[in-house]
Length: 212
Image (cartoon, rainbow, N blue to C red; front, side):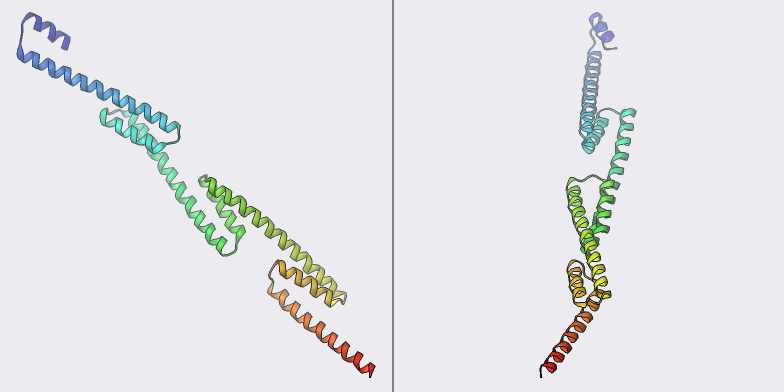
């Protein structure tokens, strides 16, 4: 259209037509600039998305729509918004699970805490949390080993007690208690220690009586 108008002006000058042409050319230049800027922003969004910077990519796409309305770009915006909303939900769930794990760890339930922290990593990866899980796994493994040894020592103590070796049993029970607290075993050990002490006292008295 502009070319035709210019051709017309070569035949018959017309100031109003010249002004109209100038306005058309300005509008076309602005439209072309907007289109170029929109395309640049869409390209930038693709690069940002490839680097995992989804929020920045979304911002670029939204800016591109200010320069040119494009249904395809709007569809991309909707897709990124959905993806980011899902990520935010996963991050929130992961944070909630970490908080639950913290509470369990403070309460002394290391296995329960470990399960929660692993579940959190399943929701959202976190290198710092992964390192913490590895440390906690070591603590849980060590705790299990102590518990198993404590149980074995208790069983050995029960066997000695059954054989009449109360003093040997007390020693095994004390070793077991040093590894893992056990109120019932502690009471049994104290009672057995008292019995051993009484038996020794009686033996000493009997020996002294014989010596007289």
